[in-house]
Length: 354
Image 1 (tube, rainbow, N blue to C red):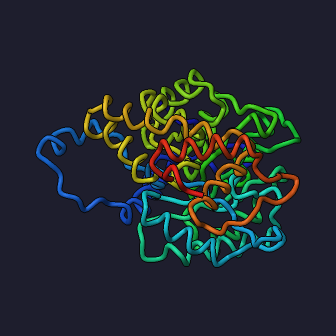
Image 2 (image 1 turned 30 degrees about the vertical axis):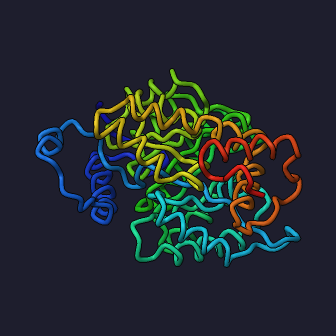
Image 3 (image 1 turned 180 degrees about the vertical axis):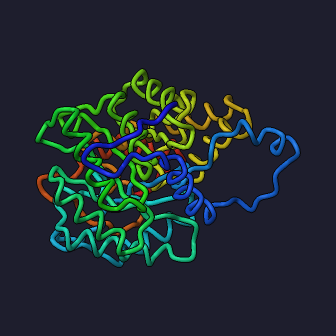
């Protein structure tokens, strides 16, 4: 695909675009290199393998633990949970995203969470991605610059919510953020069910072309045709992630690279296995078997607004993550029963648990 030759109003697009993207990719991938021995067949197939992207395949959208009152963030539990995830299937962790209740966190709480989680995973291969998005471009720029200063590995930038900007405004918003921290990798996040506006395939494609540090997209529109259009028109080194655990396997068949997951709090290694069987081992039947085993869990984790069920499931497993902050409320009795049954079916709880 040809790249445009100019980028009016910004420095995103230059003739060195591809070189810049490769430099960013190379810098991060050096620390993501797999040391596992490769079989002769894998070596022969290397040229057709999907790129191993910056952030890996399984990215966990971390819940934010609160103390029992729901007033204070429990940074100690956040640190422990992040360290656990880094050792149990998470290639990267998103801090202060939707699952992290970013809407009710202060910027100072978010910055402290960034610092704590970065410290918790130090010495592992797990990356830390800051939920730095906002419906204010200036606020998103400020949070992105702070993330860069803290040495984080990238940012997640949600489509501006509530404002309902036109596609031109969405493009200008993301380009301004990308220009503000050109060496920090950035993942776009399209979730029209929460933001009130869909970022079209055309907008995503143009942003991937114009800004070399926009390296990935979390697509949570549920629109498989839109996902396929983006994959067809973007470079192989532009990563596409499912924003829905239940759609991970279908989107892999459309060229997806992985998932930004809630379920990986509980089954990260199994999600890794599912992706490995589908992408690396040429065994879609086993990938489908894993997917089917956890379908009820995927559904139960969204039976109420995220992260209400996820936090309830963590509490059932002994993690003191506390409540959600208002206006989110506690899980209902019927939803908790569905969640328990799904966790039992997934092998996470026994019939006598709780």
